[in-house]
Length: 450
Image (cartoon, rainbow, N blue to C red):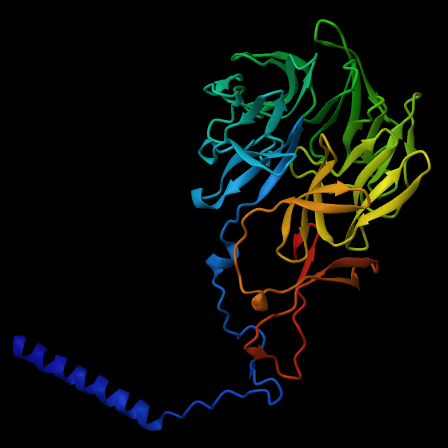
């Protein structure tokens, strides 16, 4: 039996060798790749080009950032640490450009309120309040002190503001200690120790954007109910803050109007502003003393983006009658100065693909800007222009292999309306496509790749 198996093995080996010889004998030599006579580049179909960029190189995390928080002598910002797998720390950018690490990346700052999170930090004086990713509790971090937890376990907090001269916090809370659906509310917290806090507002499914008036007498906020998303239909509320640190006379504003109201913000003199899509476009409105809205500037353009996360800031007051706003119009992003009394605008910048986190700092308005190239950073507005205040470390890639976004416009087959996006053409210095091929249509719309 063993002898038969041995003979069978040798037969299989010889058959394999014979098959290889036959394949080599009849193999047709592959044609030499064609080259373009003028450029010398290889001619190949789209999708078959070999790139020197690996998936790891393209998608490796960079030291990007997402939240700006102004303080008296600069701004705090959250920053991703690529060397620690994307953990998030907090840095301080001083007025002279000096950079100081305030919270190390190992702490890992991130909120999960509404799951998408956002707005995980707040600064009061020399203290910073930050949400830790692994336990979702809010910590007070002061110089030369250990972090002090101030919120109960199994609760989540974000989008906090200070009031009563910085002695308390008002935060969006999501309580996961209850069975079933987590309970949402606005709560007031003591700054110094772990505490349950005081529930100010409850009853709605979701809350966001608590904002206190400059004189500390009013609180504004946004709420909405399931199944609405924050870009479908939301409610604007205000209440009076009394001396006992509670609220009285909560009342809904603009109740006669349907739409997505977002980003309430008080002017330096105490007027309440919001962004709303009452006309199908997110425009900026001033709330008049009688509670009715007055458009600051009516445009067929978007002055806000969908609130996937808490803490969006697409406009900021430069002075009491001057706004700096980011607006998207026909697929392009513009940075404008709006004179609210005169209702005229002044263009500040148009070279950015995205502008977010507009906040009033101690010396100017700051924002996070990304251009159509990989370039991005923290910028500040100087007169009629902007200057780069800080740039993070980016993944280094050969620019000859990186597509540059080109704004495009096309007509929807469904609605017949114009659609705006960005076209990313194929880029490779070694290849060129056959003459009879057209570039693939790769479009990045504001909601993501399609």
